[in-house]
Structures are given as structure tokens and as C-alpha cells.
Length: 136
Image 1 (cartoon, rainbow, N blue to C red):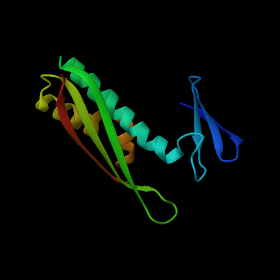
Image 2: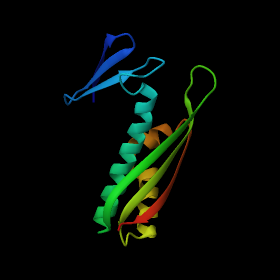
Image 3: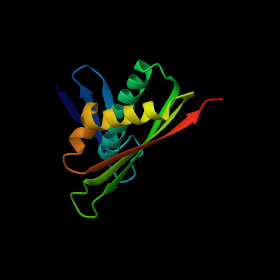
């Protein structure tokens, strides 16, 4: 896997993946053009885990209609301001979705499948929890 990052202007950068997709980063203090690199780390962990959770629930034939994860990161006070803790909270919506299945999906993602969260967990505390919401 390979990517490039090119400086665009001020503190804005353009990332390009080997597969040809572009992402804009804004490392400036106001972050007006795009997410910061650290925000992208949080979003990457949330996306990677969500892919696992949705996939596992669909394979278990759960009637999931929505999955949203809120990812919260705590950072060190001094430079480098690395993440010290990350928490992922999943809101899974559907019809008669089993809490047991959601717990299993979240745990499998956390312990086995999510490459991003597992990589981050080698250097900081990563926690997960969830809520199941009955669809109308």
C-alpha cells in the first residue's frame, strides 16, 4: 500500500491513495478547508470498525437500517499531542436487532478485525460500547 501527500497552500495538503482517491487535509489552527490529520485518524478508526460491525450484523441476518459511531479522542497536553485514549460508541438502529449480536460484532471488530483500532491500541487505550435503537 502506498500514498502521496502534496502541499497545496498554507497548511492544506492533498493526499492521494494508490487506488487514486483524493483527500484534503488542513493542519492549520482553524481547520477551515478540511479535517486535520488527527481528525482523520479518528474517522478512520470509526469507519474501519463500522465496516466490521455492519458486515458482521448483516451476516447474522440482523435487520440493521443504520449504524453511526461517535469517536472521541483524548490527547496529550504537550507536544507531540498524541492520542492517549480513543472511545468508539456505536448507535445501531434496526428492527429487532439483538443486543447480543451487536455486542459480538463490536467485540469482534475491537479484538480481531479492525486494523486501524488494533494498530492504535498498541500505543493507547481504545474502548468501545454501543446502543441498540429500535427503528420506527
